[in-house]
Image (cartoon, rainbow, N blue to C red):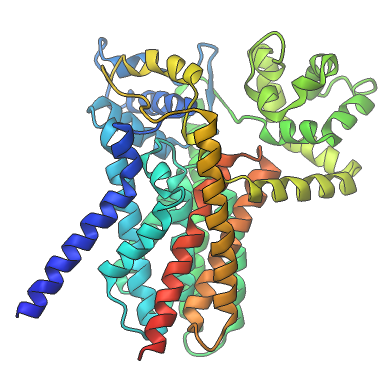
Amino acid sequence: MMTRLSASFRDLGLLAIAILFGLNVWIANGSPLLYFDTLGYIAQGNAALDVVWPAEPDAGAAGLTAAPGDGQIVGSRSLAYSVALGVAARIGALPMLPLLQLGLTLLTLAVVIRALARASNVNLPTIPTLAAVIAAGSITALPFYVAFLMPDILTSALLLAIATLVTAHGHLRLWETGLLVLVGVFSTLAHASHIPIAGLTALIAAVPLLRRGGASGPGRLAILALIALFFIAGLGERLLFGAAVRMSDRGEVIYQPYLTARLIADGPGLDWLNENCGTDPAAATCALLPSLRESEERRHAARILFDRTERYGSYARLDPDTRAAIANEQISFTTSVVLSRPLAIMKAVGANVAEQLWRNSVAMTLQDKAMLKSLGGEFERFEPGITLQALDPGWQWKRDIGRLHKAVYALSAAGLLALILLKDRVPGPARHFAWLILAGILVNAVVCGAGSIPADRYGARVAFLLPMTLMLVWLISRSRTNR
């Protein structure tokens, strides 16, 4: 009896330590970390909530609207995550959202640990293992993304859910399967990049699922169908959102032309415009060419999309109708550029993916003074006295911690590869789980690097899975050795 009681107290203590590890950035900062697009998510959430829950006229959060007054609603943001932030803002719970984000992470990891332990046929105590895995992630980017009011913490949740469903599907309880499916669906809905990540990872997962025969084959097909549901749900949400906006006459949904900006910044898109706009000026994207020709500084993808200044702006300075036409044309524009310059596209994609794999600093979760000042005026409308960021945003601090994190990621990747290549020490399910996590990190780099803008924010949101996965696989292999 005393042994059980002692174990319970030990587990409670370890769980408390894991929570403190995961929340250390939130605690040190005194509030969540904010990004300029956090306001956009809240605005879109408020617009959706107004349909069923009209805000009070004097409520601060009601002052944030989803459209800039031109009848256009940016559909690139997730409606699901927007509504979550909108609800939190209206009830005054926005500063506490990191608690929910950490809770979701802990719950997902607990299921991962239980399922992999059963699949690997090892005795692995859940709470101590969970504390060790969280501690491993907390020396890198995990606590920054727990504190970050953006959907990026859910990228890792999506990869964990897929990898566990594939590698431990025959050892999951019904409630565990249901929880992983819910986590996977919500995570896919939470960010536009998660939709192709879910789709591509599902294709990779199909290989080990379909190549194994035997009596459990139908079960494997069911798991593959559940994973495919993540992609279908994400795509369906975007289509339904656009249809609902059109039916309600609340405006026009446009999707930021990330592919167009990426192709122009890499060179092939600009070459296509220079070659074709003289003969085919009807292409809407040709409207960008005059400003892009003025200065090479204008051709950075982020400046093309978001800069409104006279010196650097291009797309964002155009009239709403022209912006909508360019956005709606990005698929046909991308197709034309790829078909006309396939080798140049392959070279650019390879370079972008390599850059994205290397970029994994937490710098983008820590805003500089200028951005904090612009954010402050908006947030104080509905969160009076909120501490936007107490952590030093100085570049030296970001650079030093970035170097530390890169070293941990490199060592973790090397250690993980060495461990899973030792087939005799690591059980098959744990080894397959690790390979799928590595594949998911690569898929994240492909989607974000090739389809958007290579950025530290996109890399760091999954890089912390490396030390966490290494810790988990090592503990499983150690448990097997000690049996």
